Every structure is written in C-alpha cells, then in structure tokens.
Image (cartoon, rainbow, N blue to C red):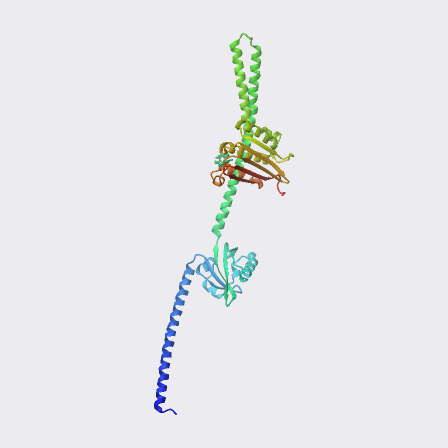
Length: 388
Ligand SMILES: Nc1ncnc2c1ncn2[C@@H]1O[C@H](COP(=O)(O)OP(=O)(O)OP(=O)(O)O)[C@@H](O)[C@H]1O
Ligand SMILES: [Mg+2]
C-alpha cells in the first residue's frame, strides 16, 4: 500500500500532466479557430471575387438544382436571391428545344468528358432569350461526381457582331457581283456600238475613198496620193476599232463559245507579248451558261494580264478540263512566283475580283506561287447547279 504522502505525489503528477494536456488542447483550439477564421476570410474573398465577375458562375447538384450562383448570374437570368434559395433548376435557364441537348451534355461531362464550351439559347425568367456559352466541370467528392460547376458567357453581342459581319460581307458580295454584271453589260453595249456604228461609218468612208480613187486621173498625182494615205489611215482605224471592240467583249465568246475565244485570245496574247502560250483544252465541247462562260473567260484574261504585268515569265500553260459536273481551269507561268503576302493582301483587288467571279455558283479559285518557279491559278466551277 502506498503511504498517503506517496498518493499525494502521484496525484500532483497527474494534475501536472492534465494541466499540460489542457494547455496543448487550448493551443490546438486556438490553431483551429485561426484556421476557421482564415477559411471564412478566404471564402468571403472568393465570394466577393466571384460576385465581381461580369459572367455567370454556377454550381448544381446531380438533379440539376442550382446550389450556388454569383450576383451576375442572378441578374443576367432575372432571378432574385430568395428565388434561388427557394430552388431554381438549371433546365429552367434554357428554351425548351435545348433541354435534351443540355441533358446529354451534362451526362457526358459527369462521365468524365471535359466540356470545351457548349453553345445554347438561354432563357431568362421573363422568357426573353440570349445566346450563351457554357463551360462546365464535374464536382468530385470522395472520387464520385456530385454535381457540376461552371461559367456561362453571354455571347449575344458576339453573335450579333458575327451576323452583322456576315450580312455586310454578303451585301458587299452582292454589290461586287452586281457591278461585274453591269460592267459586262456596258462593255457589251459599248463594244457593239463601236463595232456597228463606228465600224460601218468607217467602211462607208473607205468605200467612198475607193469611189474617189477610181474617178481620179493618174495625172492628179497629189490627189491620188492624198486619197491613198487617207485610205491607209481608214484601214488602220478600222483595225483599231476592231481591236478595241474585241478587247471589250470578244464576239467569239458569244458566237463560238469559251474554248474558241480562249484559243483566239492565246494567239493574240502570244503575238502581242512574245510569251509562249500552251493551251490544253477539253477534247469535247461542253455547254456552259453564258454568265459562267464570261466569268471563266474574265478570270483567264485577268490571270494572263497579271503574268505580263508581274511575272517576268517566258511561258504560260493553260489547261481547261471537265470532270463530270466540274469545270477546272489551270493557268501556270514560269515567272518569279507570287508570294503568300501578295495572295492574301486585301489590296490585291484583282485577285479578290478573281475569287468573287465564280463565288455565286460555289466555284473556287486557288492561287499559289513558288519563288522563281512561277505562279499557278486554279479555278473550279460547277457546270450546273445542284449536281455533284
Ligand atoms: N502571275 C504572277 N506572278 C507574280 N506575281 C503576281 C502574279 N499575279 C499577281 N502577282 C502579284 O500579286 C499582286 C496582286 O495582284 P492583283 O491582280 O490583285 O493586282 P494588280 O495586278 O497589281 O492590279 P489590278 O487591280 O490592276 O489587277 C500583284 O501586284 C503582283 O505583285
Ligand atoms: Mg491584276
């Protein structure tokens, strides 16, 4: 048995150890309180930041009930904090036709597929709608998904800007195409007027000069010479009138078609520029409506003009082929080669016009160049609408 004094000693030792345990516990509690305080401070900071965001931030549970949204979210969808506390379901934020897609996408995200941004038509409480982009992630707790959290971006302004841009681009396209048509019509009229009016008057003048020449006696040397030089002048003027009117609108296009007009133009071009022109045409003639013929011919003309003006080439190859419903034309020179910058420059209006020419029928123009090897212009154009 322990003596009473020994008992007291043991008790005193126990009291000391208890006291130090209490101190440790007190310290631990202070640490815990500090941590809790820090947590509350961080949570407050995080909420304040989230509330400052000019985009919606949300969290929802597996049933789609919203468990959190920032101030902007409430404001942008037109709900109050009280309504959120009473319960709002995520599906209420979409027009009815989007809900199935939303369900599928949520399912996919919960299954671990990352969302790269889904575009929807969202619906506010008052029924008005806007275009939205949802970026969401699964909320994982203990290794299991328990809901979604994400950000919603209002892309109405962007959509509007996109559609305005498309509209003005379409308008520009229509204007360009209208201007081309007007230009072609005017060229045709001027070419005909020059050819018919001027051409006929000059022919009449030429016949009058022949009439005069016949009536002059050989002794009237001066007069004979004058009439001769007048006649020569009228001849060259007739030539010039012909050249101008065919440049404006090669009559061959209307009379004999695209291939014949290209053959003729190549011959003229070779004579005029000294650049060797190799033309390879589709074996069979094919029918192409007049507007498309003019478009292809004008591209061909512009490409050839570019070769003389910029390429410093000695040879040009031109191929025109038909593959079922697709017409393809290739114009290749052996010059200095167009650069990427020149191809894509908005200042290259000739090239812009080239592309626009076949755009109304879904045609394409691809331009490429290799330094000191040459430039290639490839055109494809459906022969008829609707077929492949
Ligand atoms: N065949 C070619 N070889 C080399 N460079 C070319 C060729 N075709 C075009 N380029 C380059 O591309 C540029 C743009 O051509 P584009 O036809 O748009 O304009 P342009 O011929 O200078 O003027 P225009 O508006 O009168 O046609 C040219 O200035 C030239 O530098
Ligand atoms: Mg040009």
